[in-house]
Amino acid sequence: MSVSARSIRPVDVAGADPAGRLLPRVRLAGKCDRYVLANGVELPCLGFGTYMIAPDEAGERAVRSALDLGFRHIDTAAQYGNEKMVGRAIAASGVARGELFVTSKLRNDEQGYEGALTAFERSCADLGCDYLDLYLIHWPKVGGHEGEWRERVRDSWRAFEELYAAGRVRAIGVSNFLVPHLEALLEGASVVPQVDQIELNPTYQQRETVAWCRSRGVQLEAWAPLGRGRLFRSPEVVAMAERLGKDVGQVCVRWALQSGFATMPKSTRAGRIRSNSEVFDFELDAADMAVLDALDTTDGYTFHPDRLEEWAVRVAQAHAESGV
Ligand SMILES: NC(=O)c1ccc[n+]([C@@H]2O[C@H](COP(=O)([O-])OP(=O)(O)OC[C@H]3O[C@@H](n4cnc5c(N)ncnc54)[C@H](OP(=O)(O)O)[C@@H]3O)[C@@H](O)[C@H]2O)c1
Image 1 (cartoon, rainbow, N blue to C red):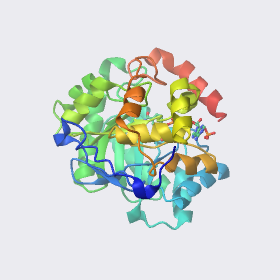
Image 2: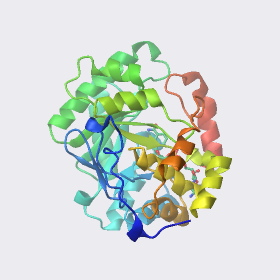
Image 3: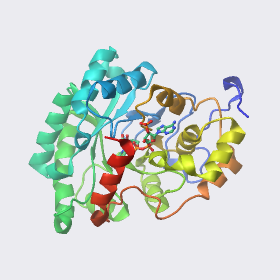
Image 4: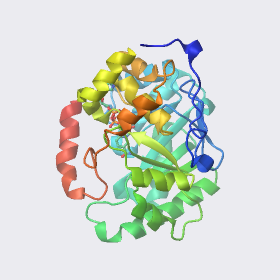
């Protein structure tokens, strides 16, 4: 059963949580409704993900489709190899830079103070931006440097704090940082990360990290909100989607938003880009949220930041699934 937009009661995520003092407030009435980060910067709740979008004309068309559909939050990374393509799509869209929220991430092999400063400038140049809205340390640990990850992330963070103080980036944060990584980063830090972007979907909820971030005012972003397509094979989610007259992608995106996470589903297909964003005319009630919350597992991840030995296989799998 779907309901009309008129009958929708906007959800106030902060008000719904008893520990909501530091949680973001967002009404979830449209994709550009904004979470307010700890520093006051506003983050559109629904972004467009670009992992595995090839840096070619088809990729550019996908990013253009998202911008034409009204997405104003674009998530990329130097590691994705597509920042120049994303920059071309932004330029061709005619959307004013000030209307956009552009995120990029520091590549693992460029961690460190000097590396981070250089990498940031290259990402800006490739994206055609003279500032970024959000810059993230992509991963806490790097293969081959497992013994010195603390020093590498702290040195990178020093550069991030300088870029932030200089106004080159509006918000700084981390990605794939679990509690021990966050605590290590904070030793000696002057700025608490404003965002942690981690893998989050009904089958992988990372509750310890989520609770830690909530208690410290760190906004969570959910990557792989569709479980990289795996949720389309979940009988519980399929049944719920059918009952609600929605598709699985819409139920998963809605679960992320109602959980208080910003999120950024990825697709290269215009129809899916549109349907993944049509999530503001229905609401998951408490019983539906409970069913989805109960799907949590500890091994539903794509990549685990502390299990680097699995990465080669998992990256190859991701490429095979995406055909890139
Ligand atoms: N910080 C990090 O380390 C990190 C890691 C991974 C991802 N991310 C970010 O998070 C974004 C989203 O994560 P993700 O791309 O890994 O996974 P995702 O958004 O959960 O899933 C994307 C996959 O689902 C398919 N899909 C999308 N919409 C669909 C629909 N409506 N029906 C059926 N299939 C659908 C896509 O295929 P088609 O393209 O063929 O539609 C693609 O294979 C990324 O693009 C990236 O920006 C960040």
